[in-house]
Image (cartoon, rainbow, N blue to C red):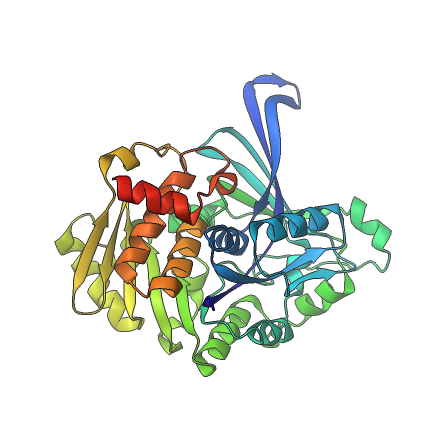
Length: 383
């Protein structure tokens, strides 16, 4: 039987619209095209793992609406296990709107919707699937209380469609860390919190003095995985870095970008010597079997606490990616996890993940163009 991967994370429907600032008339700006796509670090990871022939269980929350149904249909078409994709009756599906004028710049607006309703019970239920590996949540489940304003609750589900919003600009936070989440392909994000939310979501927000806050939910999930002796994969990003990672036992693979490693070490890892000087102190604080440093768009540095190895993609493959497109963190994580579960070979899995990521970035639309496992293996063999 195939080894099972458990992913826990947020789900959004994303509207991407290309606009042209030069075609602006007073308060109206015209654009050329738009599209709808799934969004969220957890969703991107689960989709990638499932499309690459991984046995992936995705635990997420969606609303009782058209967007939720569309996401469920898409997730199922990718081949993922839908047992823990649950619908919150009185909530909208998380929604994000991205306005951009080129691939590298734009604004994303987010309303969390049903993503506000995760509980510890959901986590316990998800682990009843008996996973062989668990990916520590890559986004801020439930949302952090400091980032989300207080809300007023409506009993009337009809009110949800016309909810006024409050707005928080967290672009400064993104700039501080110098890294975006997997699906946030753009430079700035503005988070909306609806004035009207469901009773379920309201109860979770009101529990800000309990253990059911964003950081603790991710930590709770990691503790459950540790107690059940489930291997964990950690993507060290602006959300997971807030967790007391030094207290978590059972991390098998830790993935960190060169930018993020620079943030925590003050050393930019653009050579073997600098990478070792940056990762060794880091590894002494957070214990993991393997440390994967993503260097640029086409290579990874692998360290196991004693030895290191480097995987660099061949030139013909590097040229396939649009260099201006963002890194596909979710695709890399999903591919790495699914391949490692199959081969238990960290070098092979890292190479596989690199190829999957860069081939996905070869066309705009990203998740729509994730290659199959066979395509990756054939392309790698040719090179």
